[in-house]
Image (tube, rainbow over the protein chains, first blue to last red):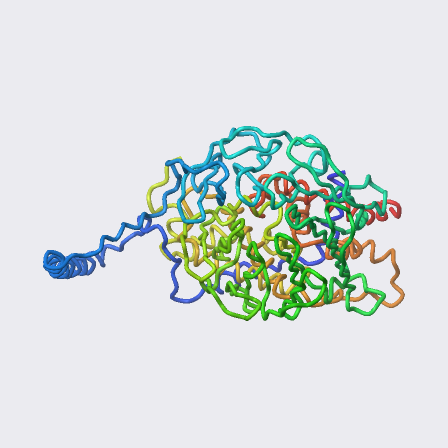
Length: 438
Length: 178
């Protein structure tokens, strides 16, 4: 079967071949007189002819340092100075344990230097090692899919607590299907339940109604409502919000030419409201046309606010009662816990620009602006609070193991803490991040 | 094998040696194009994406640690660039097939040229399209697909399975006709 697929893929895609001059063109496209950026200075080779010049430069700097140091010393002994704690440099592996109460919310992330270690950062900025997991999980990293407070996370096929103790073993649901073996649940905001959508029809069966289920680690499954339909063609039905506190879930179905989402009452299974978008292309859709004008959807953790991000780069925010309550000029990526703040990316512009902001969307106040030219890899709202964790990285790296920066931004725009982490390391962002359906 | 400092292509490329950079990245350009075309389905956009990725990888070469495998590193940059391109035009209409068949060419001809599978691929979510192209067009092992896409192997498998489930009717149609 693999060979058949391979043959058909080659047949389909080999219509366009790279031409023989492509390699030369790529090389000639390198900017003239520009060298690679050097991050690791120890790799740098110094040409022999420049050593004297370099030595002179170093001598001048040492002299300058002595003069400045003398002035600083005189100042220090004549006037008391506030003590500034040294800023520690990034360490590949966190070795000090993070000592917190088991229920204290913690942002969990994969350790920078040890892929079997889960680290954590409290919302006031303290970091440390959380636990070590045994090898043998599905993924290359130590954990995935944490609940909002980071008290539980998945290390396939188990659910662990922060001490590394196995709380439950995943034994039922789509993650145990032979074709879908990773965890595909969304943790609820009570930190204990999780929702999932089961809709994997046998081959040739189409369409199959999808079912929203609610369960707990090791608990029994409760069917909430049959919703959407998983076709045998390109279709994806996902639950993106599971809120026990607000008694809501948001389920999204994306197909090749439309998107529909439902806001569901978890306790009754009743659909509170739904939005459905057909492609704006005139029917019938040509086979070679993909989605023309359907929006993307991002929901707050409780499903009270849902942003419909229009292709134009404008986001319309709908309130709890299915009425528009705000418009944001930008791509809403996430909401704070109470929904009042939104992480917004600049409207699609130059490829490398994805500037992030935190705005108070009800009055348009920009609370914080992120570094320019960075790709937003992840975000996490502070459970029960108003801060946001935002993880950005250089789009040029592309790898989840590449360097990123995790910021904790308070509701007044203050950066409470920032830390170098791996770009794809936020556990809460697996399988989806911030109630988004991208 | 021990490398003498400065003699390996990565060190030479970091020092600004363009021929060393070509030695590293040049052999990957064809694969990069195939990946980009598989993701974007547009020849010009694919070439642009590879070109942009090449420039980016040149600029970021300083971050490459000794011993890093070039292929997943470079293809990840290409894939990321393609995602950025696709994201940048996520509302736009993908252009129609560049060379329409001769008058009277029918369904069978399109099947033969793979147009049907191509069109079905285009309708897949980008993450599924990406893993299918890496796995079945570039013939890469799952671990490398995971490294390039930045997700665990389990997630790669699930994306592949979802993608294949969507493509299966097209494969079955092809089989029925041949």
